Image (cartoon, rainbow, N blue to C red; front, side, top):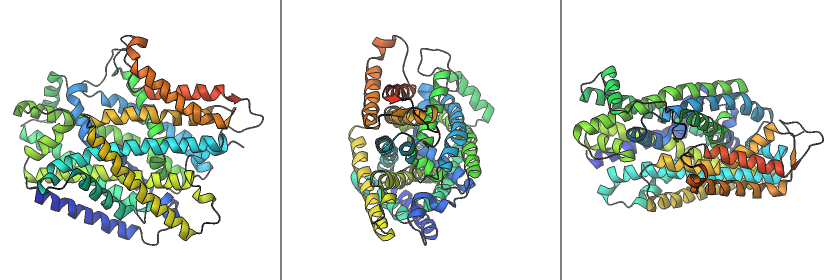
Length: 489
């Protein structure tokens, strides 16, 4: 497949994004950037969030992991749906009632100013690490497939992609992203379906025949009953629920789009619809993974993991399918990267700098500061992608979930304590508790064989982290005099 041809399609796709951005960012202001003026269409948000939730990591890593893990990831997806229901009917009513721009303002009203800053800081750390890991995976594929042939170094490729993202998010923010995510999700899902249909035809198999072949190879197993295994179904479902509650419901990037919807009812419909659609989409990714492994076995390909899908799509499929794969891949890349940079900018401006509290800064000055922060985060993304490049890992989805277990755990503990308890915490000690809990989790993870024997600690490390944070907050708390669980009033 000609790298020049692939590159021309990438440029054409990006020009289309710029056109969409130009139309949607006209007459934009800070409210447009942060929350889309609360006028986003819930159906567009729901559909666009599929791309944000999946990212390039899901596009490549989930199919690549089928050879080792079968369809075990679907257990986590069942948990996702449970988590989305909790977000829709517990967290969203709270956020809308308080009319939040940053969801971490809840921590300020309920626990205190230091708790608020701590929650926002952990989000910034979590999203920076997770988003740059996702970005690295896709940039690495584009580098090998296209840019290496032009002699462009990896750092320059990353810089170019970040510059592209900045060009269409710099003005419009969330208002623009709602529409670009919809376009990108459409391209990604279309690419997924086309690749599945092509491989089935290439192998002369029907749907039923392919499932039979996968079952014979052990690829299609969904539920795992060994309680000691990290794939045990209850552990995976429970972990999936808490991953969604934290990485979506307590994440400014994801909730920024949800609270940009005009009414609570529409926002709830958005989240529930997203949870249901995700079940089918993930199952299709897993089915594609089974097909890819069958195809690799038939063609005697010695590639596995994250490299399998790119290898098959770019070297063993006709040019048109390769083009579709590349467009689908960058369609998976942009929603996770553009939303992350926008949300990080919003959180840093509102939560760390206190942009909304600065009455001495007029709209013009606030906009200039927001734009500078936006550029700074793009530079930080460049640095972290280069870091992942230097410490290359075979499966980035494992890295991302591990990072989430450490960095989202304190957020889980903070929000859970605020919602479930009426007690008042010693606000100055909250940052210490939120640092100690992940450190204890590292010890548990590092020495789990000595502590638990044959029992494997997997994704439930996130729950353990949140529980340790909750217990720590309980230890530094006292009974409240008169306090509402929901509003802190």
